[in-house]
Image (cartoon, rainbow, N blue to C red; front, side):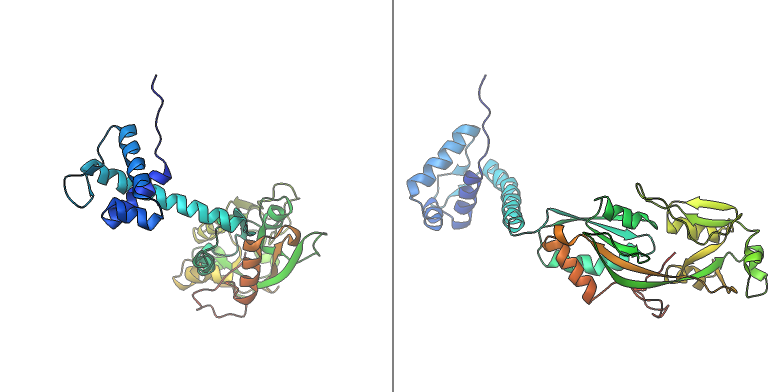
Amino acid sequence: MPTARRLSLEALTVLDAIERNGSFAGAANEMHRVPSAITYLIKKLEDDLGVSLFDRAGHRAQLTEIGALLLSEGRHLLASATAVEARIRRLASGWESELIIAISDLFPTESFHPLLAAFYASGAPTRLRLSSEVLGGVWDALHSGRADIAIGVALDAPPPAGFALEPLADVEFLLAVAPTHPLATRPEPLSELDLLPYRVVAVADSSRNLPPRSAGILTGQDVLTVARMRDKLEAQAAGLGIGYVPRALACPWLADGRLLEKRTLTPPPTARLGLGWRPRDSGRATVWFIEALRAHSPLTSSAASEENANAVGTD
């Protein structure tokens, strides 16, 4: 059984050089090799493939149709190989191969797009993976090693040894109900006794290892649990329940009348959220993101204008 032949990157590089220079001699000069070595390599490639790659009738090295097809496809391979080599060199200089960033469901992912674009523009070789987490799941993702950076960790306790936490954003909540909900026309401010008879919509904690948490639920209140903040907003707009939602995330829903804000006797909560990571395991990509978030956080505080297009909300 004949042995299968494989294209070499060297052969494709030579083929590319000949086509660009218009001659075997020009390719040899560019690659600092003798012309006979170039001729031998191309002849061997033709013999291995059983095709003619060049029409040698004229003075200029002219690719045949098959040769042109091979070069066209081969240039994609050369580009990929070059990218891999560059990536390996960069990884050797301290860049992580992959960086996993856990982001609180309270923050819209699109608010991080400018930061991601800046990272890619820097030419860093690290691949990024984003995960959305809810409540204690943000800290759980970092603590269990499912994430390298956690954005939106609750700052209600000091971090254990080996972890770092920094304040990042204060998140404001508001009580929202559908225009068709019985509480929509109830005089304000509303008391807890006013809220208790009505179902609350809650987002399930995504924690896998640490005890799950809950917020904004009164003792004895019926609960509809959903998976994401978007689901919570939609359920409340459909009149399926009430609940506290991030002000910035709720702004579009309030603006077009799908939700109404109701004032309460007890001031709505404000969550202090932070940025968490493991300093000892930090590579260059982690350091890049930590420094970028310190300098230009894509998250806004509760004092920011509701009209800010980059505003970030909380649950």
